[in-house]
Length: 271
Image (tube, rainbow, N blue to C red; front, side, top):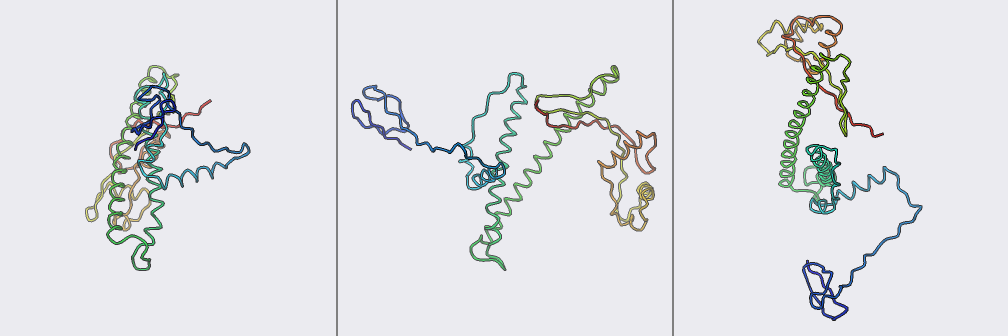
């Protein structure tokens, strides 16, 4: 892109790749282009839901490059903010923008997919080849986001484990210590929960421990033998923990018990 500017002093015209503040010939100040402004009535207001919908509609029709150019500059990190946390905050903002971009792109193409040239459709949509490629890239995005979710979840659980283990150790020497931890953006509530190894089961390979559990939960043997009875790992931990808190042993069939250290994270309320 080039810009044409005329110097009012020497009357020379310059075509340059960018605007300049002073004349390249006589060094006189170059005129500044005035931007048009739109007056907004003082009484104008928009409901929050309508404003959000308008923002989504705008994002639907924006390319990735357009969205990047409109992205506001990130504010300087707070002096009390750890550098790693400040960087992660910026990355989270990028992820939120990418979510809006991808969601908008998917939404605006849904009707095009429905109207594609397939039995019962019309000829204004995508071809079979385009549908195949679109579905393929949906699969690729799904796999990428799922793998990313697993990696992020693993780090979240690791942070919670470190907090809970340290707080448990500190509470052994000081029973009155405050367990809840507070960061600049969030709070964390550490906890210790019990878990037990669950028996494995394969159809055609009877496992007595498995049947002990199904008997305890009153599942008929003929139903249990089909292998459709499965225990939730999280629910099992809650069940074992509740039994331990009540002073009861877990039912027969469970394997070795062990503690798990977890932390529940919540957004910190600003006061």
